[in-house]
Image (cartoon, rainbow, N blue to C red; front, side, top):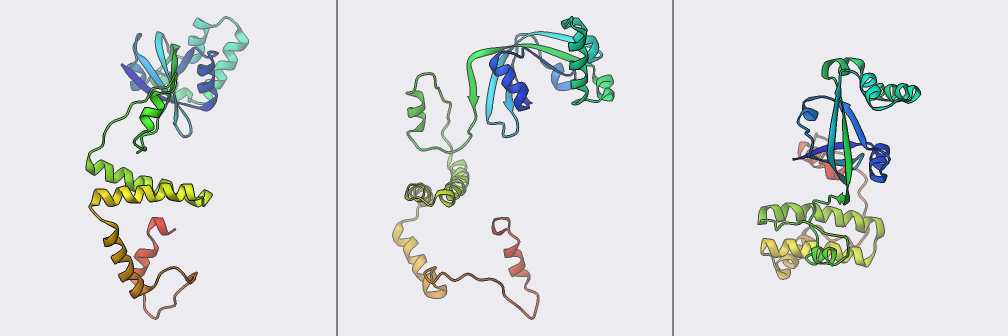
Length: 233
């Protein structure tokens, strides 16, 4: 069984470089499910993108962190230091309520996992798998999921274009727009017709007009609703 846990950057990096081999936690409901022989996937805070996978080799239990550390370490100063550091994370009330656990772990070789969960170009999985030491997992979306991810992708590509204003990023943005058009069954002539109609009615964006505000005699609830949409803020 694979359990998922979050870790701050410092302990995460220590597990990654092999200097930390025991993870100490409260013995809460989640930790009670961990058994010897299971695996734990640690995700590095704050963005949770980098992950490592470890084997559970042993489990140490006690009522307090200090007693637990006495079972594992012999240096009194180290025991005191580690105990104080745990009380910076957990309270004595929590310690009394749950008890504590030390989970002895072993980092699995070649087990650094980076989670993307996003739509990618068609040849990306092939490119990843062709590189030595890299292997990806992917799935094919249904049309409903595909449209949802295209909507997310258009925001991603728009933000990247805003950052760089490059023709390459503009091309990426157009690629997503083309994919949406294809999924929706739109063709360019139809889109251009809609654009032309709106241009004739409201104009285009050629004159660089920047609207600052509008004064109205009466409250305009429809306009307030539009202005309060998250993407306009």
